[in-house]
Every structure is written in C-alpha cells, then in structure tokens.
Length: 318
Image (tube, rainbow, N blue to C red; front, top):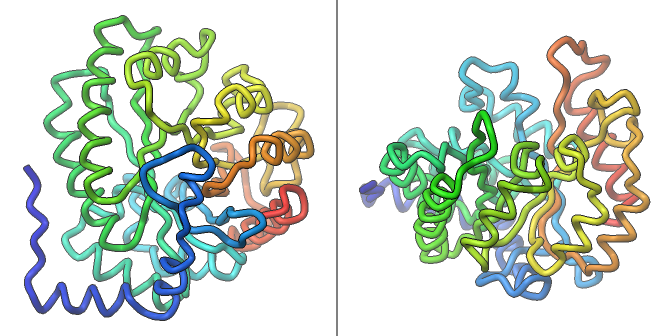
C-alpha cells in the first residue's frame, strides 16, 4: 500500500506552511457543521454561525484546457483567481495531490493566497474489481496528503458504464467504497458521492444501488448534473436531506448548454435556495464552472468565478 512518510525536514516545512494564520482561522472555525446537518463523523468548517456554509470553487474549468486535465503547472494562477473571486476555499482535483511535493507546494499556495483547501474530487472505475488495487492505492495517497493540508471532504465519483450496472458490478462498487470510506474516516475525511448523469439516469439506478449497499454513505450532489440526468434538484435535496453534506453548483441555459457564469442561466436557484433553507444545509457549497467544447469565453475565468460567487451570496445567502 501507499507509504507517504515525509522526511523530517520536509515535514517541518509542511507543518509551518499549513499552520499559518489563515489555516488556523479555518480549522478553528470547524465546528461540526456536517455533523449538525447529517451526523457525519467529522465537522466541516463553516462561514458563520447563521449559515454554517463555506463557499469554494473547483478547478474543472481550468483542467478542461490542460493536457491530461492536469492543473499542477497552473496551480498558482488557479489559487490567485479563486482568491480574487472571493472564494473561501478550493476543492482540488485528486491529480494535483499525486506529485511527491504536493503537500508542500499546495500548502504554500494555500498560505500565500489565504485560501483554505476544503477537499478534493476523486474517482475511478469502481464497478470493475480488476481496477480496485490501483484505485485503493491512489485513494490512500490522495486522502493522506489531503488530510495533511487540512482538507476534510472527498467528493467521489464511482465511474460510469455503457449500460446500467449489474448487481455484481454494484456489489464491486460498494465493496471498494466501503474500503475508501474506512481510509477516509481514519484520517478525518468525509467521503461524499458526487454524481454525474450516469448515477441518476434510469430512475437513479446506479445511485440507488449504491445507497442500498452502503447505507451510511453521504451525498455531495452536483445540482446541474441532476438536471441533465432528468432529476429535479429540489426534490432530490428534500428526499435525501439527511445525507447531503456537500454541493456542486453550476448553471445552464434553457437550451441545455452551460452558462458562462452562475446567474446567467435558467436553473431555478430561487427554489433551490428555499429547499436548502428547509433542509438546513450546513456543508460546503462549491462552484464548478464548465463550458461547452465549442464555447469561446467572453471574459477571464476569474471574472466568471467572481460573478458566480456574487450570485451564490445573493441568491443562496452563503
């Protein structure tokens, strides 16, 4: 299995980097928000006593333009843009945690830009038992390094299939998820299921199959992928209220194409705001912009992030 023992000199440097004023302030504000919302095993930092929600961003829109979707070479500009946009923190992509110097490098950027590491996205083809060994080793590496950076959420995608998964595939998927959950819990990290369309299509066949096999698993729904998968996000929030500890936020237009920023589309975020208030959501809310392949941006990404952050503050109150 993965061994992430850092030499003493490097570890001391990492501790100094990750224990500065911004990180102390972030960690000190962690007061069991997820436990309050969904009885998760560890608390998540909150923005205030009133809302208990931290708003961050995910770098997918940057990764989409990078070779191999690797944001490592542009991490500094990503952190700078998210800070400029008014984010409280960043949700990483797990590929950024694979390099040997990830803890030192990301910790330094977190301190430099006063931007907390909230967690990371993670995924793999979990219904294929032949992939389990590699995925589990990757998960242990990523979770261990994430925890050293103060991250507390693992937004996990189980991987799609060409057709609805068989009971055997769902069994395999659940077996691996249980192992990853155990690793995460041992390091103070909460795994949440992050959906694309394939988990929620066909009357949520994939997601329901996982929930039946891993009864206590938490959810981190992507509200826009729900829409694209034919699921009403308001109904989903109300139905699974006691499991939801995390959100991915994005917007789309009436024609089904993604808007450049949140608030420039037609998703009913007023209704979503009412549902979130009703279920007393108290996890993290992360903006994850995405653009169609043929889309040409009209402004720098940092400006679209800023517009989106302002929209979330105005519409959701976070």
